[in-house]
Image (tube, rainbow, N blue to C red):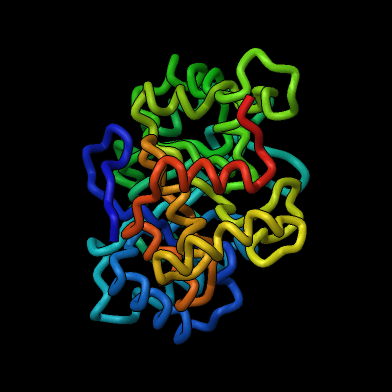
Length: 306
């Protein structure tokens, strides 16, 4: 498993995160097998959120690991997210604290390795966030803090009051859904990709040593499904298959390698419930695409070079 340094934490962690959004349908036994398989492959970093399956993903995960004496809490990195409620977002101090208590109860652990603010809240009071982070850190309930789907200026606003480093930012990123890259290449153009939809988050995170965690790494833009094997991205799939044959791996592995090739040292949030697919994603860390190969995939997804 390829590893990297997580933000400013100094911690060496896997480049592939096990995303637990789809694990709520597993029973404790199959969840236990999944956890073991992931850890055996070096994927001991698990990403949760309080809304995944209405909390069931955390609940089943907690039951699966806590009753297995061979699984030790210190051998896993547990990350979760909070802030999304039914019909609105809530990053108030009270709700952050309440959410973390629920997360810890469901995961059956005394602490989170990292807590992420799941979505920006238009009504956020950064001073309240700072108070919540201080309470969580001082109580030992949360060790590191980050955000998800935040722009640079939203992080700057938090940093004005929050004492803790922002360690990571989860952002959508895949070969087709890569405006993070496109808006930096199509500078000063009137093309679709030139639109800066994220405030230059990629460059900002690199400057600030904030790790980007790429979610939906195999999704098409607009939540239209997986691009792998999809006729909507026939050219991309053709190029993926060529490289897969060349490297003797699967197209999934090449698509993962494309993300891990970027010098920003991103992590991939692998949101699969299948052990075999997780192995394919992890294998992407063993492949270092050439610059020409990387750009060939980028262009095959429909992007341009001005």
